[in-house]
Image 1 (cartoon, rainbow over the protein chains, first blue to last red):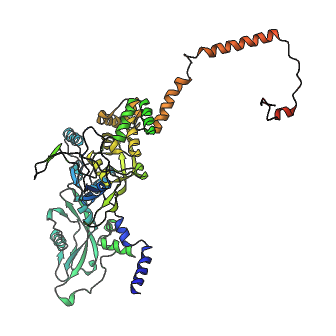
Image 2 (image 1 turned 180 degrees about the horizontal axis):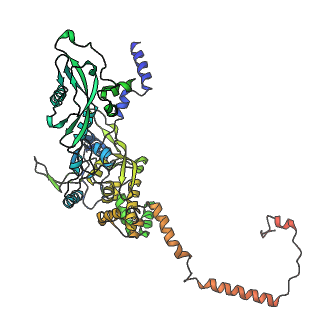
Image 3 (image 1 turned 90 degrees about the horizontal axis):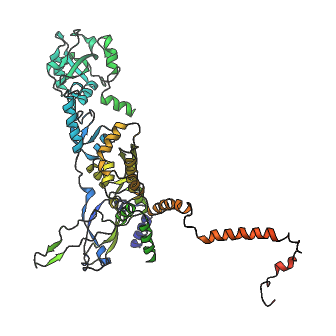
Length: 269
Length: 264
């Protein structure tokens, strides 16, 4: 009885496409070899017909499981995270085919194209691209900085005026090392202690590789060494609306892109 | 056997360039894809020292009807058997190529085409630095499919006529320089890439004007017959007066089924 029941269940299952059928549907290219090679043909005679035995094959290799070699391309324009214009880059084949070649951002690094590129560079001689982009990742870094809200901690008891080293320390706290010469402060000084400045934004300008510049939002937060003086804990203090310290900076602060966690929240809701 | 013979004779009536193309396309040796050919002419058995000749017999491939709508890069369906255990009977097994749809760009035709391809095709296109070079440099027996042959035909026609990219003459000159060694005369390009049926239709169109043209070698009997008829008509008009109206035969005589029977 039990066996019969199992058979019935199995029979019912086979009517629907099961996992095993789907696994068999994966199709790949094979390199095969005859297990029983055919006999040799005679001289000046028609070739012998193959026997059924000669159609038994063994798989030597499955080419689709191998990793494809990288593609070598010449970029025709600046591509973020990939390279500068006229640079020879090595990329993964499908990324190169569909993102770069299909859109016209790159051409194949064939011998003719390489020669043409060499001639073009010799003729032009002025490197235009360096004035536009300093490196392949500079644009990504710039965008990442523009997205951030930098928390500048200030003291609640002692007098202070915000200087470059405050900003540098704040960057260091969020994991970015910025030298002093790359930071440009605003003209108007911000000084305290002043509790009205709590959670207000102001702008500093950061220069990457002495070329790309971006404004970065900084948020003032008060902090004290004495626990009884500290301000109460506030949740979601980095979310808009953003209040500026100086009213004329309001537009720039609101137009800069939102941090990633704010975007994720807006998508989820 | 007779069908094979007539085919050969039909092919022999077609121009030489088409015959060459057709024989390459259908019977030319294909690049090994599904097997690894042994190199050299002879091999020696390392144990016995016996020398044997090397004969590479390609694995027979099957071409389904979908094959003609894609570029499979020499891959096709392999039908055969697997012998999974020593004491087990062989089991039928088909080895299929993995097909994907991809967009390929042709510089000469200035088009992006969605084509069913294999990974091998994409790799070949990369190796030839572009779709146009791949199609032009690959022999017809390796393109094999109707689509590949037609693409090659349109490329060769465009190169022979030099009328592609009408809005961009600078690019056209550059491409003509690049594909210089693939340019063939227009008459050959017009015959290239036709199927046998299309070639025969074209042959008929080429031969028809010859038949319908002025009859140079018209048999004399036609001329004499016409002259004789004219002569007879003239005599008839001169000699005979108009014939009297003869009495009509009854309608029953026309129905008689035994009219021409001698016994009646």
